[in-house]
Length: 64
Image 1 (cartoon, rainbow, N blue to C red):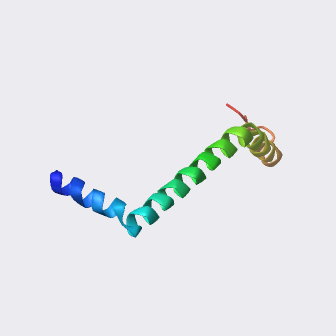
Image 2 (image 1 turned 120 degrees about the vertical axis):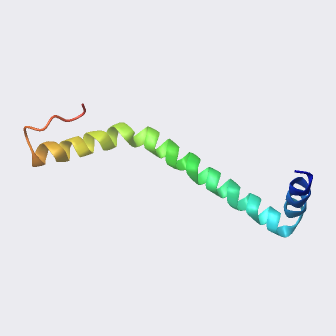
Image 3 (image 1 turned 45 degrees about the horizontal axis):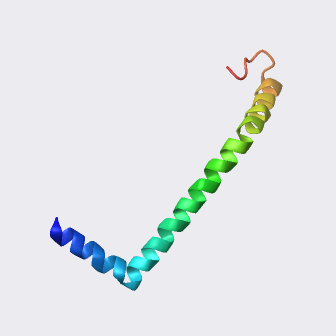
């Protein structure tokens, strides 16, 4: 376990570690943006798809 911590410390101290942290921050930011967009637009998207389903099959039950 100590060897793992030492290796992790060496990676984080070097340029590769900084690059890895930057990529992790970017991935986290993109995930937050996607979650926010789905949360804000979720109802509108559901209504849009419900309209498409109803147009294709008028007897279909939508939003159940």
